[in-house]
Image (cartoon, rainbow, N blue to C red; front, side):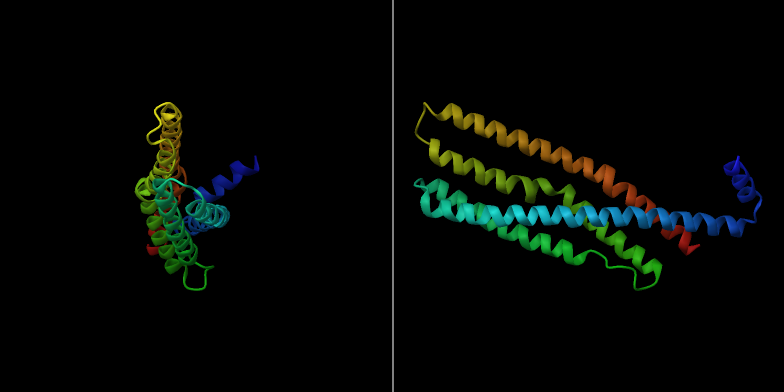
Length: 197
């Protein structure tokens, strides 16, 4: 009953008041959405950094300890990629827009730029997030199984696991773009349009 009355009041109010109400609703909705995304990104980056901190010493140990030369090269590849990835994570964290300390339209444009960059980065993840470590893992395993036909079946199973993991990760990133980045970019564009009118 009260909701119906509020809708009638809103519909009978002047156009300027309706726009103000719509703008307020969009701002609150977007702020809540961006806060949630900020928390999600913060914890996601932290988990990825912890994983890198674990991966680097393990594969540095493998460079020293594992006998096959191909496995040593693969370990060095994985360590190098992991260090590069740590710097990328720090850049993503640093580029995240800070709390609103400028006018709101500039703040929205900063978030729009940030989300578009991350969407593009996520869309190209197969080249920088999936292929380099998967290639390193395949070469690492190949170093152990090379020349041993009997154990080659185990190597083929490992490759199958690596490829399935890569495919699942690729589709997961596509899902992230569709469910996380696209809706927020639409909200930001809608609010920027309302703010500029």
